[in-house]
Image (tube, rainbow, N blue to C red; front, top):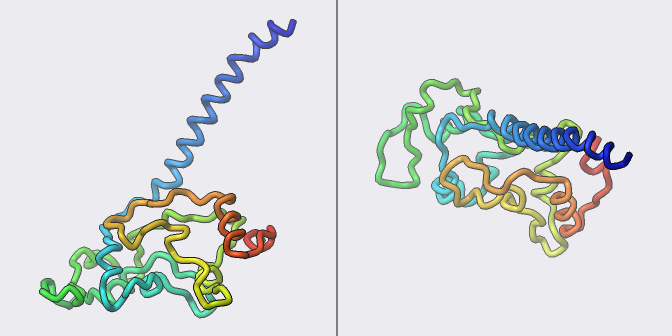
Length: 185
């Protein structure tokens, strides 16, 4: 009797296992499909500029209420890469005009984020990025979660999807509470 039940349910179990594997891969691909970059971007060249000096907040800052601005708008880019600026310059610290911005409005964001949080997660970049140890050192850096973006020459994802366990490990290491309400409303 047990053998006949096992033989009867084996195809269903195999089908379910294969279906879940395919659907989870498809879901992950679908979630990242909108993260395609419409314009090239070189973090490395920007991070080496004297005006930015390795400070991610120049382009990825905060609103007055502490909300993270995320991906910059074309208007933020054209504040340095002026639409009427020079096309060529021998000085690497002079931002050149980028004709690729001409077809975009200042409010457009031709890039999308790889790092989308589920609705049930609240994450404050400002709280994490301004947290300091008693000796004044910052507890976290951008690379802690995003990988070595400062040396990347394209918009590809570096570190991969952040899982809750990784966040909790970091909270533990940095002496930040792991209580559910810290990240979940």
